[in-house]
Length: 83
Length: 461
Image (cartoon, chains in turn cyan, orange):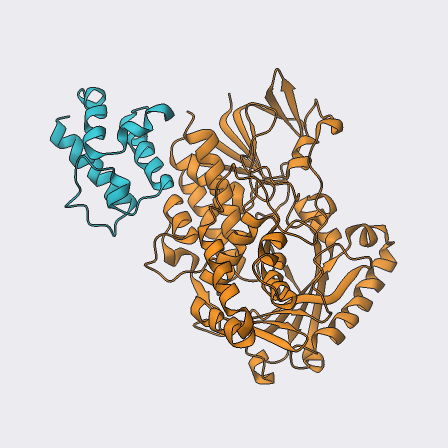
């Protein structure tokens, strides 16, 4: 998957969890939870969806690396490039 | 391994945990010893009528569109829609004490105004209390328990107002006698007063049907009439699960909603001296009355009446079979339903003493139920219009009934007063969810199952 495709995948997953939020202006370098109403349980579901859809395992210690959109892309790129 | 996760009990928490785990691909099995799901919130049929156990009303009701509250949170976690529970809001409820009445509905500002109007000298203190409540992080699993009575009485100086505020939260979710843990008080205060009460037209069946359908659609397995007789322990783990029918199951992790002490007693290495947990004492008698007319026809328009007729409100195991000096009168008809319920109904809940009920012979048990019904009715007609001539059918359940069907020691509806908030036990793969984990009420129970499934399974594997 390309970086662009990874980004659109993450946004699509977030949109599925919180369909009422506008995600079009999400900044890449600011924590996602500071920009949209996403609680810790919702955040967990982003990680769970990645596992469900693509079999990507994110250990609990790495959760913080997915706090921003840019961080998520950087973290996921090596893990999703074969997909 | 037969399963990734085995869940004991198909009540609100077990089903909610099951949905989370099955949705995310875990091999899950829920074992339920009863022939009916629901646990402490269940239902039965009698004489062609449908009755609910547990649920008077769902707390935590917020209108569609509100996002950051427990109810929408749990709907998102369970991948359900707000419409699925088909909740209809209450009309109006009251807290009635000698010479004082406070009304509340699902508009929190209305309740605040009621307090200010009835206790003008406490108006500033009440605002201070609200500030303390809103600043509390009640869902913090690692917070030290503190006394709600101490916190509230350090802010509010009128004991009558204190007792009136405590009455609904205690009836709807307090395992402790006389006092309440402050975090639990905040949860209940918000869920009843700040959010609100609602009920599906079809009662608890609606909620349970939605949960069980979702669970099965996600691939979860449910074994009914399936009793766990013991959990075999080996080196800090539960190694296998022995069932009453002789079968042996294995699971990587186990979530038990059977209650903490109840679960510990299943362990092959059970040692009562290691238990640092008290068994709950709070149980209830519920009198269910079918009327030959709509309660509104008798001038009864309130949904819930929380009453107390003595100087102080005592929330404890009574010295007699039943304590009729305080109670809850629920009118299931008085929600904003699209169609009226088939018959008029009142449900009266009073604190009761399990040991005394349990000691009676079968004959005495029947006689005492009839006698206490009469005593109860005599008391409650001081707070609602006298409906005694309109009763066409009665049924009563006692702490003994609750013990029989839900398996909780002492029929303790709200479980142990010492909650295991982290859900952890001394065994690495055994966790507690539901009543004894700490979130009470129907929404609380579902959130308990969800958070324990998240914390101990989904985040770890």
